[in-house]
Length: 113
Length: 114
Image (cartoon, rainbow over all chains, first blue to last red; front, side, top):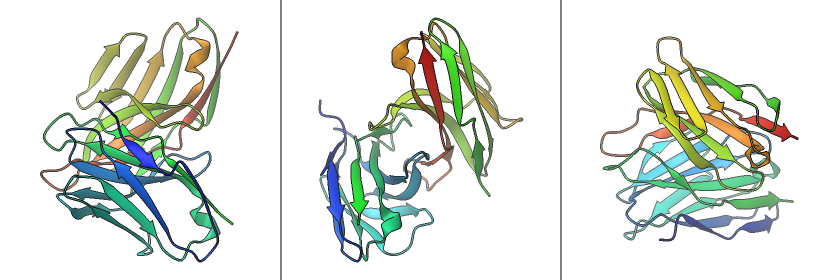
């Protein structure tokens, strides 16, 4: 059983560009949450998708947007990249009807230059 | 507001016991998680407490006191592979029918030495 998979694993972008990160949840999970983790910090909640809708959002600007597809996979889009967006982006999947444990993917390391 | 505090760094000796504390102030509390994260890797689930008391799972135990806003993770018989960051996260009450979001502390970097 594949766990949570994210792609790509590493990415380098230029300031002002746009980026799309992808996440496939663990089999049987229907909820996807995205987190940003700066070096030496804990993950910060960006937003959460359930039933193809954004259900909760953290303190992130509108430059951060997302989408969830019918197969529960999800994308995170960041527009007008800033140097400060450089971080590890983590996707976590869970089941709203099962245990409350969230399973994390290995993350996408985004570097903005 | 929401605030989660844990020590930045700790060191311990192989074979010893270490306790990592976490204090929190948050509204809509719906449980507390501990995750382990090795450098460059994804966080992996260690424990979940929603009621007061101690939960034991092998070499790892976690304690919760909701009235005090306090939790700790206890690691016994430390091994070199336990060197990692340990993240305390509060499950924040979210919308009904879905999973709650996690509010993380900054993490505690534990170094285990021979």
